[in-house]
View 1: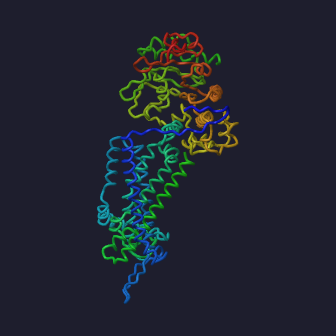
View 2 (view 1 turned 180 degrees about the vertical axis):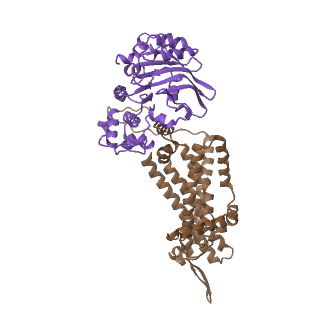
Amino acid sequence: MSTTLEAGQIPAPRELTTKHRRSDTIFRGVVTGFGMTALLILTLIGLFLSFRGIQTLHTQGFGFLTRSNWDVVQGDSGATYNLGVGAMLFGTVLISIVALVIGVPLSVALALFLTFYAPARVKTFLVSVVDLMAAFPSVLFGLWGFFVLMPLATYWAKIIFKYLNWIPLFDAPQYFFERSPFIAGLVLAIMIIPIVTSVAREVFAQTPLDRIQAAYALGATKWGVIKTVVFPFGSSGLIGGAMLGLGRAFGETVAVYSVLNIVFKVNFHVLYGSGGNVASMIIQKWGESTADETTALLAAGFILFLLTLLVNLGANFIVRNTLKSGK
Amino acid sequence: MSENQNQNPEGEEMTTQAAASSSLASISSENLGKRAPGTKPLGAGLEARGVHAWFGKHHALANVSLDFSAGTVTALIGPSGCGKSTFIRTLNRMHEFIPSAAMAGEVLLDGKDVYAAGTDVTKIRLQIGMVFQKPNPFPSMTIGENVLSGIKLAQLKVENKDDLLEECLVRAGLWKEVKDRLGAHAGGLSGGQQQRLCIARSLAVKPKVLLMDEPCSALDPGSTLRIEDTINELSSSMTIIIVTHNMQQAARVSDYTAFFLSEGGPGQMIEVAPTSEIFSRPRDKRTENYVSGRFG
């Protein structure tokens, strides 16, 4: 293999290869195949939704995204459709934001308690409780939300309305506070706690010990350490966790369906009992939909799919940028 | 090393302690007999009395009694695993961060036990600062914010933050290099600069004692010398205790040197003496073996 080089001549980099054993090749193939399945399934779902939904987007135009009605008019020459999911998209985002505003602080507090304050035994117990919450069927959250949480939350909503109705967000066109975005957001907040908590816990636990010690050695209290060391280190991870929660909140269907009054009208008054949610709307319309409506529902699903994808890409972008500047 | 620093003023105290202790009694009393007894200490320093340390069931450190009078630099030397770091971490109560860690004995700061019931541990750590082996500035903060971080954490009132910032950086020997970029992030500094930044950060809260746990072990020789200059500079105004693996460093910076050793069991303090004596005529054979490079 030796080639004589003239003085000063730089050799070309050699190609680095190895001969794989057959067992290694097979294993590599199996793992790669299964690994790619996730990507494949997601792509196929996206393709399916877009192929089926594209027809609706074609007939309804861009207005499908912005209009807020779902009118099917039976005429002589068959039905005409005037469909739009604007209110549903708006409602989905609104409810999810309510869920984040309530759920993220709770999750962060819980994660801080578990990581820095809880005695070992309490910690083990609580962690499994939180994990159990993640596995809890969402229909049960919905039922519980309907029968237990809603009466309470309606009462709270009335109090908030009474004192804060000068803020447009907390105002209401009518004195009707049941099945509102606020209540749906509350139920969702509880449902995103497990995922946000476990990400936050993971992130907090990775805080470099030397920085924590540095702060303690300067006479910091525990809260001081959390503020100066843990939060700056964990901020990007927390954003990522919150975005994961947002993704979950976007897609949650049954629980929201149980506690939300779905109305095809954009409503930003969170306390008022009128809201929208793409996933719940699909459930609501599914059973009785005509073929064309079904296509429209798939189109709505496709839009939800894109929205979730967008949020996750955004989360990735934010996390990567904060990682660059923060650490 | 100044003349009066070489005379340990706390002879009586230690003799009493040594008599009470078991295995170290002979060594300690022998050492202390050679010091000038009855000399008054230069203000209040730090005193460890019969300190033991455990990690769970592992007895890491046994019965260490050491005196650090104000304004002196004491080097702790000894092979790895002999309990030096554990010992200095008991002095500012950083030891207790390790789960299952335990200690016995007393650590007196200004004559008061830092482990006494009802003590606010954060106040103790304000008075006993610490510099770690690996430079650990807060990377999310600027250079200036790093220096003043202790002030902010302890919510201390400072009249002129700019003056304090400059004073601390000058004393840590870093001012000239960073004065034009105090707003830059600390992560951009070299390892040696980061370590001096950490020293400046410790100084900002005006500690009475500064503990340094192998502060130069991650640094190049040039940075090491700068930090040693800093230590010499600081020793006029505070008590410094430095753990080091570098015996030349101990010889260069310290007034006293204590030799720690673990012979299978828990780490013990074998001998403490003025640094020149430890290196020229150690009393204990084991110390002699170590300082002459025969083991460790």
